[in-house]
Length: 267
Length: 164
Ligand SMILES: Cc1cc2nc3c(=O)[nH]c(=O)nc-3n(C[C@H](O)[C@H](O)[C@H](O)COP(=O)(O)OP(=O)(O)OC[C@H]3O[C@@H](n4cnc5c(N)ncnc54)[C@H](O)[C@@H]3O)c2cc1C
Ligand code: FES
Ligand code: FES
Image (cartoon, rainbow over all chains, first blue to last red; front, side):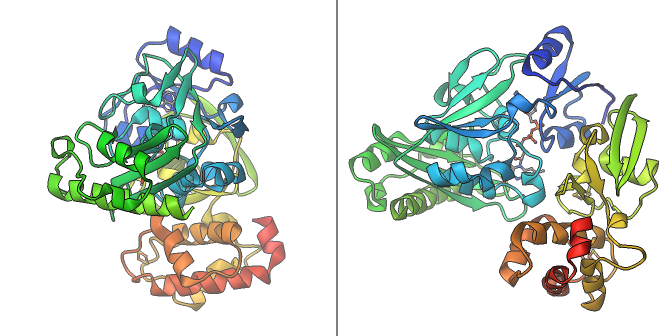
């Protein structure tokens, strides 16, 4: 790991000012993606701004018809939150499937979303639940936020402050874990809202997390797994690598989508 | 250099460190607490697990400066006055180790499992909770047995649990 200047702000404003005034910065959240990347020298920021002491970035609350989660909230906190379990159990279940217990004690929702790893779990929940991502500057709809592998709408020095998830009628997440890395080889999040169904796929796409309109329309008409019969995942969107080829991933998308719908229907 | 102040096994420590120092390096090299091991250095194996404010974390993926103002417990901090912690005793009793490289992390992980899931642990729970701990020797069987027994023993030793 190359040397860097370390900063430990205690408020969002202080962090934003530091980001504005310094060259070549990175924010540090749980560090469970960034520190391994820095060890490999794939990242070498001159200034590291630790968000860990900013209390206003943490916490979970219900606000009207939404669950609002602070960016620095850890995966384990979401998994164990009574508020999340009651309102959107699928989201707590998703958090519980991330990595292992020790990763969940450090990794944060904001870090996961800012990173937009093509195999990460939270991006699928954000898209399917039609989440809004709030930053220190603006509010961004999930549909506009995720812009391809490791790419988001975030500008230079922009800080995710919280994520707001509208509470759906029913939802579920089905994940086929890579047996070694525990990331999603394919994960499907399905959510039935009053306005229709949204379905998002992570792990499979060559361009990161994506929705499947044909599946959403069929499920909006009738929310049963059989509605997906005859609808296949778009092959041209599929990733292909040493872990799984495109055809296998496309097949898994169908299987995971059915499992998610069945789980959501069971409640 | 950045100043860190933290508590390690009940003792306060203040030190100037290069900010890129990992918590595991700080424990091993600055404090000479070499019971915490480095197996992979890539957050996979769990040999480096310590408790940070009571939660099990992989110290190879935490900067020492991130642990500022927190309380760390390492494998050296769990025995009481020369008497093994019940989980350590259970690993010895049930032959839960061979080379011993993974053992400090396994034991710190095991105590964390008990604090979250209670003293009556079934095999399935233990195996699922050990997802972040790798052992290249034992085949896990005796580790699982040791953790189940250690968890029971911890119920009978409330004082040690409170101290931890
Ligand atoms: C062994 C292991 C297994 C894992 N398995 C899974 C898995 O199954 N599923 C999964 O989804 N993930 C998995 N992860 C990744 C884990 O969830 C990470 O913690 C997460 O992706 C990044 O979160 P972090 O808080 O650690 O962020 P960091 O590593 O601190 O930061 C990641 C990036 O986000 C930026 N960032 C962080 N917070 C903000 C913010 N508030 N505003 C703007 N930018 C910000 C940082 O600058 C950095 O570029 C795994 C990690 C490990 C080590
Ligand atoms: S050395 Fe930290 S997880 Fe392997
Ligand atoms: S006892 Fe050798 S690695 Fe576990």
